[in-house]
Image (cartoon, rainbow, N blue to C red; front, side, top):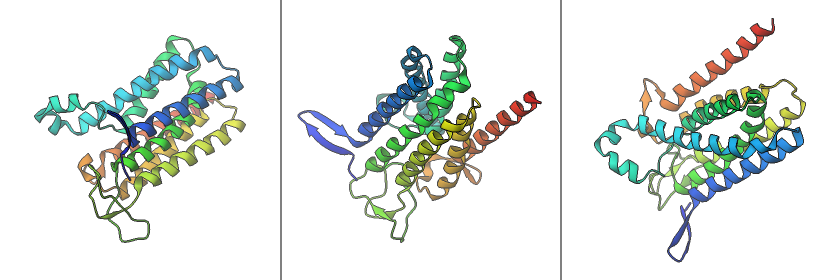
Length: 251
């Protein structure tokens, strides 16, 4: 587990950044390919992807600063200088989806169809991103004596020389499974929004459960729940309300 993968002269290739780049590229390729197969307006793929990516990046950073507000207030300059460090996935999902919704509204596109197209690829990107977390040592698990334990020796984030649960890899595998499951369902589902709702439900449930295995408690808690668990509950409830409202409209 090494974040600095290689050095090319003065350039350092970091594992976390490389995996994020791989995830973004894989997501774009799959979205463009599936848009062509579905007969959707491919001229909207790149601008929608770009706006959603920017919104997701900003949202992930903003939620991170909110959860770390006590430290941010003490030393805001340090957080602004190292702007590329520290993100909360849920913030990226929420603001990224909102940005996509506004783009679709502005361009008179069916948001449900485009959400069904894009969200499986979001799961794919997350799978790569969590491998980057593993290489960097962030988002680490609790100490363990089980055979699953992995030990970091040069991490700037995780405790070194202590066996930890590989929650990063668990999350990565779960995200890849979500991607393939959502692709399979999208082939048979004809109702717009089905894939998007399923993504939100699956991710919120999986994230809620995995939080019990996380060891980086400095991310913050609200009562007995971590911040991410609380957001997972809210996302689950909002998605269920979305489903119920659509059923009522149909009636």
